[in-house]
Image 1 (spheres, rainbow, N blue to C red):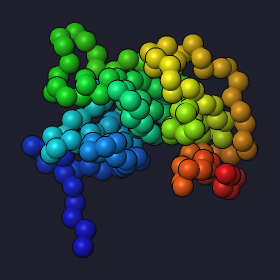
Image 2 (cartoon, helix red, strand yellow; image 1 turned 90 degrees about the vertical axis):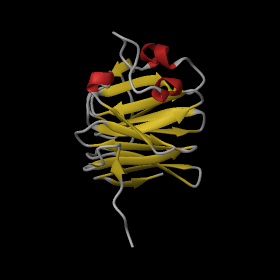
Image 3 (cartoon, rainbow, N blue to C red; image 1 turned 45 degrees about the vertical axis):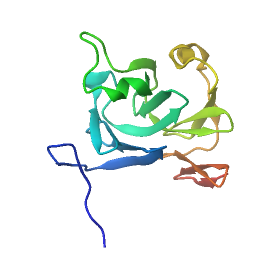
Length: 172
């Protein structure tokens, strides 16, 4: 028996889900065209480009320490988790800080002390998790590791292993 989950006081339908995860008690939901949603203790928060995300097409989210890293098909943005506790950011302030514009970004996961990023074509790169997220743009190289010649690449972690899923097969 399934029951549909609807967000916020407006009971908005969550459609075109691209990402679902939990960090502690917080539910993280990404959509194909409607940005990201978080739910904590029955309180829903809707996050979009108006909040500083680089795109409303969410491909991954990682909560690490005190920060939330959101990956869209156009790049990375970050915010302090404490910034999600209020309904609106301070006047004139964007809730998210742009980390880097990365067109064709297709996923992000946390694995082995790194944020591992993947592009649609199977290129991957790992960023250390122990640096200030606002300074990550300086550590992203121009050339990434090529895992395969693929399209539709996505990363997944399963039982402490990193997986790359793509049109070219499954790589571990």
